[in-house]
Length: 410
Image (cartoon, helix red, strand yellow):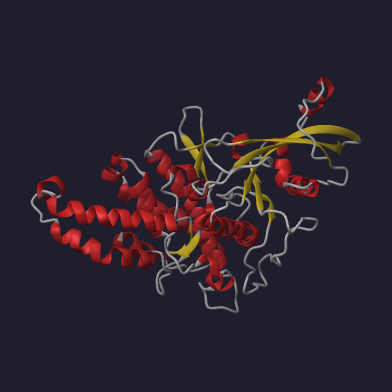
């Protein structure tokens, strides 16, 4: 089953061109590793070394659901590393399936992520694995039919991760065990949609995002924020707005920053301490003394970061990406004029439960270009609140006023 890739014959090529639209568009897409996971020095082995035949079969069944896959047969597979995302493989599979009383041959493309070797990388990978296994099915459960998920679908989540601490009777529940037939002793892997099949491309070709890219990214974040806010208030046994942090403690980690972020923070503090006293005020804020700002950052910045990333007891809290300022974690599909029309969020190893204003601020002040920061911030803020209001169709009275307060604080 796990044989090397073989080019199909001319006859099989003709039959493969008869694939249904559902399997060539909505069911096979691409995602990628987060920047933080990519920096973990992961060496990508071949898919045949990481996957058992049962793994590929299970992933294909999930990809083709709700099709009847009783006649599914894997004919061959091949994989290659993605240079822009270390530790991530593009997996191509040839399979056959009975369609209209005839056995036809198809091709599928998926993305395979493997567990990194570093301790920090393993922790982030475990969080992403738990998100796709436990949280994402609940987000999709509350989305209306016209609302597309802002994250790729997962086809296989092999490996152990945190089990939910509380069961919500109104939500789909996964017991936490790997999929049936998976080898629990094998390395943890995650198989996701190949977004490139639908034309999605990474945004990291440009260092900063223009207004249209920022708007598309905020629309995707709004769906993540809004759907998670609905899930968070869906359990009648718990206080409204407390389900996610009760059931999934990994969404509220003890450490607010990753090891790499802590290293960057300490390096930045040393630079501020060394350069701050020698900076001329007119070079930073004309007519103002910046020494007070430097001293304030040195004393309170770490505490402010922890406060921002901690769930607020009174304001609106939702699931947040928290790493969307990295362009490698955003993928866009463009229209004929090369304008972004849709965005997908990838690299969910740092997903956490906090105020949605965190993601909005990261887009506006870290990912946006100078023109957006100078003239479009107020417009995008108001648009984000308008987009997020889609959750009101579920008859939940969410505290959107607190979102405005959070945005003003940023």
